[in-house]
Length: 79
Image (cartoon, rainbow, N blue to C red; front, side, top):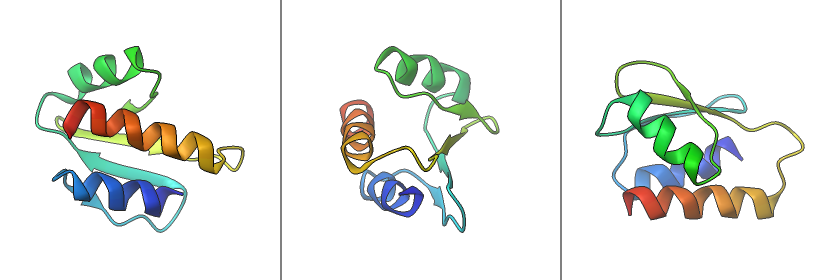
């Protein structure tokens, strides 16, 4: 699911680091702490991982519906 999320983030023009695990790293135009707050208000919990980079971890209990909601939230903010 991290790969699918990263592909979606890239389709929105966000920079991504190709994931090898369940962790997705992606770059946002604003400060990562500002993006973290905005995304959290929409229910997407991420962690700052640099000045403009966020980290999203996809645990095995994240199902396809949750992935779809996650991608929709990202589109809402960056699409």
